[in-house]
Image 1 (cartoon, rainbow, N blue to C red):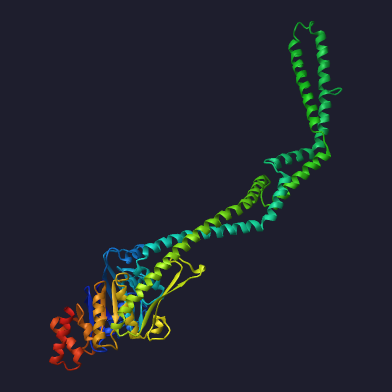
Image 2 (cartoon, helix red, strand yellow; image 1 turned 135 degrees about the vertical axis):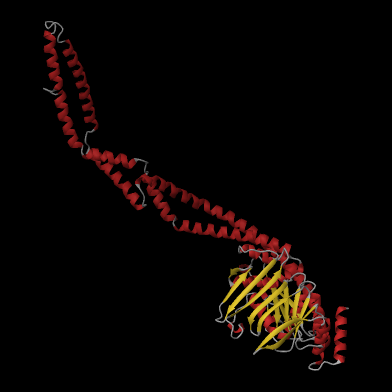
Length: 556
């Protein structure tokens, strides 16, 4: 509910502070007094487009501040929490507009973008006037309004859950198909490459082993020659082994004659002879192992070069070739099992789609039943509003599969035909300004419990009607104000008499400037204002008496 509105330097308003109450507040005054300024100010502070022409002449800028009182379950709280803004029962909106057309927006004194201000304002205030209708007559809102009227929100929640499951299943199928398509595109290459690596059969550590063998064999001839010389020096004729044997025989012949002095020498020579024998055998074994064969070297080099060529082809180290081969085999195996997995996902998608389609169909049937009730209720409201020749209908159309959404599979639009025999069409295109406002009022009365913004504003909804029709408009506005706060700008005394609070808008001259003033009217002045609306320039006693009867009738 709007509780207060403060305006500074907007058009003819220099400074104005108003307080508002629940129920129906009426604003009256002479044409040109400035009633539209109040609506422009409310539009500005709730996020409508800023126009530098709104700034009062000579002022550097203007400011509009609106204060609202919100119930705990109001949807604005969720928006504030989502944006990380401080909330509470009281909500303060402020818009500053410079003479250069630039503006700044604030929510609870925290700076915000105009888009967010507009989003919040749309949840707080709904304006219906000659220049356009907001919210209610927007076709994108009609489906939600019908669901609210029909009490279908629990059923809608089930459809939304089914749609999420359907959408997730569809995304999983799409991803699996894409992966499988990529794998299929590479299948021929993978099979050929995997077969090549299978034939090559690389082993971990093989490159290092082959490189060592190759190095050894490449120097095999030189090593073999040196080994031969070493063997000859150790065990050949005149070698170390023969020399030690000769020395030992000579010393053994004279050992007894030397009185034991040669025994340590003979023992040392004997140990040396044993070591020389072992060295000789070891040299011969190494020589046999390193026997050079050019064919073996060729085979080693071919193997080493084949491994390194494969590594270059797959852009990896030779050591990683076994892992590359394993990965290829796994990809091919996944390709074989991928089709089975895709089949399972597609079956899941089919079940999810069937579940959603069934629930959406049931919701559609419930919507069609609710549409019949809505049409009957709105049609009952039209004759008293001088729309007895008009027809209202809720048009439902089944959407194609590609347009299904969490809201179901139905498109909903409110349509009217203003004359018998004429084709029905969208509200905003078929009805004139005055008719549009009265259609909006009829819809609002019917949808009051299902769709009640904090504050509803009707601008001259009674234009072009009078008498019983104006009285019917006033009665419905009063009925609507039991569900939501209603502000109405009116020239109709029948409507003004229905207000629980009456504000009079007028112009006055202050110094050299003309300014707009708004004053709440006590009972006596209210009767006088309604009498003026009845009589015109000269208020008569008959007009006062008629005003009294209107007020008494409204109270009754």
